[in-house]
Image (cartoon, rainbow, N blue to C red; front, side, top):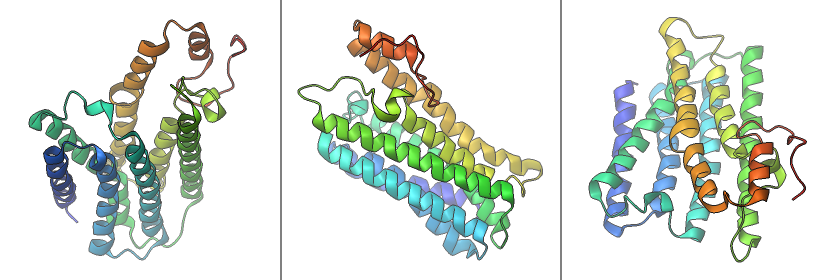
Length: 261
C-alpha cells in the first residue's frame, strides 16, 4: 500500500471527528480519535497486504492492542474530567484547534512507519529471529509499565480530595513520567522487531519511534507537564525534594538525598 494512502486515511479520519469536535466545542473525540487512527491504519495494512507471516501479523496485533488499551483509558479519563485543558486556548479557534488535529493525523502516520514497513516488506516471514523476540518482550514490558502507571495515577486522582497533589507513589516514586517511558519503549520495541530484516533506506523506519520520543521529551509531553507542576508546587519543599530525587523518565531508585514525605 502506498504510504500516501495511509496518510490520506489518517487525515480523513481526523478531519471527520474534528468537525464534530469543533462544532460541539468538545474534547471528547480528540484522544479517542488518536487511538482509532492507529487501528484504522492497521486494518488497512492487513486488508491490503493480507500478511500470513507471524512477524507482520504479530506487529499489527501489538499496535491494535496498544491502541485499544490507550483509547479505552483516555476515553474513560475524558468522560470523568470533561475538559482537556490543553485546548483551552485553541478550542474556540477553528484554525488553532484544527492545526492540532492536523498534527495528530500526521503524527500517527509517522509513528506507524516501522509497522507499515514490516507489513509491506516482510508480510510472509514465518520465523522470528531472537532479537525480534527480545523486542517483542520489550513491547510487553513497555505496555505493562504504561498501563500500570496510568491506572495508578487515575486511581490516585479519584481518591485525592479536595485537590490532588503531584503523583509520587508506585511507579511514580521511581520516575516522574513512567507512562512516557513505557510509551517510548513500546515504539522502539516495535521498530526493533525489524532489525534483522532492514537494509538501506529501510533503517529510516526508526524515524517513527524517534519522532514520538522527540514529542514526549521536548514538545507536548514532559515539558508541558513539568511546567504545570512547577507552577503549582514550586514553592513546596516536599515537591522540590521529590523532583530532585526522582528520575524524569527512566524508572530508577530515588536518590538517597530525598527527604521523607
